Length: 232
Image 1 (tube, helix red, strand yellow):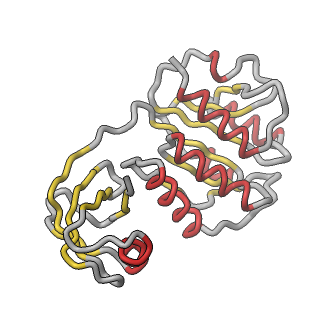
Image 2 (cartoon, rainbow, N blue to C red):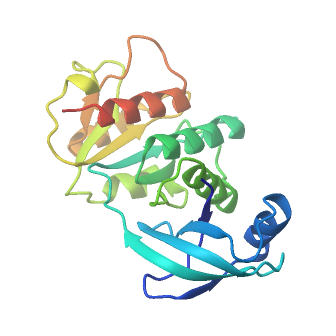
C-alpha cells in the first residue's frame, strides 16, 4: 500500500488536488490512472480512501470516498536533542524515530553543540517521507532549533521530564514512569555541560541511563525512544 500526504485535507472534504510533487509521483512514477484507488493521510490522524478523477501529472485530482479517524498512539514522546555535527546522522535519527513512533522533536542548541544551524524544511520532508513509508497517520511535530536556555525554561508540566545521563543511578527502562507523556533530553557529542546538567536537575528532570556503553547522540536518541516504548 502506498500512502500519500495531503496536509490541507479536512475530514469533511470530498475532493482534493495534490501538489506538483505528489501528482508527478502518482502519475509518472507509480503510473496511476483515472479510476484507481489511493490512500491518503493529512498527518493529523485522518485516513482517507480516494478515487482518481484526473491523473494530470501537475495537479492530480481525487474524489474522497471514505474518511476515518485513527486513534493516537498511547504514549506521547518528545525528544529534545542537540543536532549532530554530521547532518546525515541527525537525518537518520529523524527517519528512524518517525518509523518507530515519536510525537515531537526539538533540536536544541547547547554549550557543546557542534551544529548551530539546521535546514528545518529538509528535516520536515524527511519526517513526511518516513511517516508515509511506515504507514502512520500522525506526522511528528518538528520544532525550530531552540536555545538550551529557552528550552529549559519552558514548563512542560504535563510531561515526565527525563535527561540522558551516563552517571544516572537507574536505566530508563527500569524507572517507574506511569505518565503517558514523556520528554527526554539527549546531549551533543561532547555531552551536556555541568551547568546545563545542574539546570536540568533544578528543573526536575530525572537523570536516566541508556546503556553501559558510550553511545553516539543519534543512537542514544533511538535507544531512549525504544526504552520509552517498552515501559510498562
